[in-house]
Image: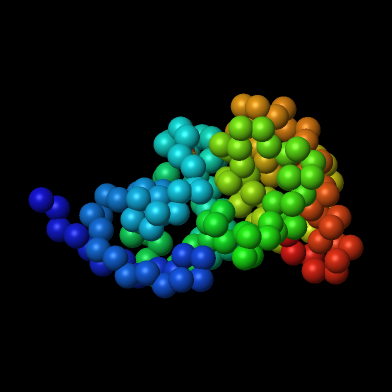
Length: 164
Ligand code: FES
Ligand code: FES
């Protein structure tokens, strides 16, 4: 029996204190301990990007991260994007531009693109493609995903928020 360790962190603005086994992955912690199942787990070894979340604002593969590494950190998952059931501008851009098909890759892509657009609010298409290179999508061929990110950037700029 492995000794459990205490963890304190914030997820989507809510503070949590839990006791977990040290080997618990952040992806499992988010999905199974907090019931936030919007974060998807595909390859489980850092290739597909489906499990991407933000840790202190930076994209992180939660399947390659121990939950204890998130001690004291602020985590954002896909569940943080909509507000009271209203899609965020980034989600809306994907909806309007058919930026998803099966949707399995979408949470990871949205979290990666959220961080990317905050860093680069007016990206060129090739910059978007490069930023997407860590997120695999088996369905879309990426064209509509790039269109969605362009639309999200344009919407943020025209609203003056520069926030996706
Ligand atoms: S499930 Fe984490 S990168 Fe694929
Ligand atoms: S929409 Fe199906 S894997 Fe990307």
